Length: 301
Image 1 (tube, one colour):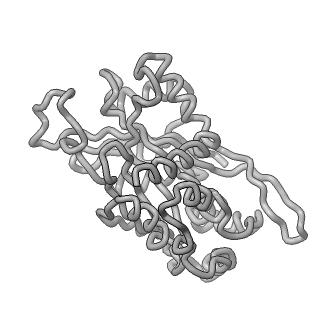
Image 2 (cartoon, rainbow, N blue to C red; image 1 turned 90 degrees about the vertical axis):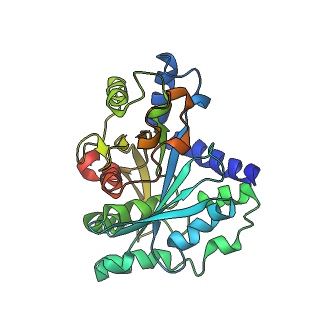
């Protein structure tokens, strides 16, 4: 099963890097500045996906892929203002990233917005994951990067953008990887804190999400996060007359996470700390602001 998961993750990361130039910029600069000796030194803390909460799709469909690969569903999160629900999933082995899957509560949107979304998602007649051979990593990789519904029109995208920027992102990007996350705490001193890593990121031209402040900290002080502003991509939209139009929209971004030791392990030397000793899981208040990395308030679009 590790081979299947490796294939899926490699496919996701390959396409993600093509869409998010900040990834290459950060990694190359980390090597050049001797924060790491090679890209393989980076621990991927977690990856995240966005989905539409409709009966045949959403979390209940998407999670089957990773549950089959040995992931375990953990805590639930709810984001009332953004009309989102989410779960995180712990990996089968500590060398794999955690996974965070969110979904839009489509039924909580206006009738007009929900109707627009369903005009696309209704093309998917049944849970598409049920038709996959989940032991075939290549097939799953192809599925994650193929259109689930027809290309949206620019007018539909704009209408959704006005009500739910999350909805607009998913209607165009579908299952593209939303972000991956560098585990800052595993870097050499002094770069092993979000405070110092943010300074490094900004020094190489990475724009940071400042929603709620550039640094997002859990109430217990043990999970500290930041993220880049989403990369802008040229997106081709379909039009009702059969033509196409190209517009610049938000794509994906990079996150940075510092997980501090749990109190009972706080005295352990750094070289003896592993995942089991550090704060696990996620924090709704942090995640709520990190979602905004793709929002117009951050991208300026």
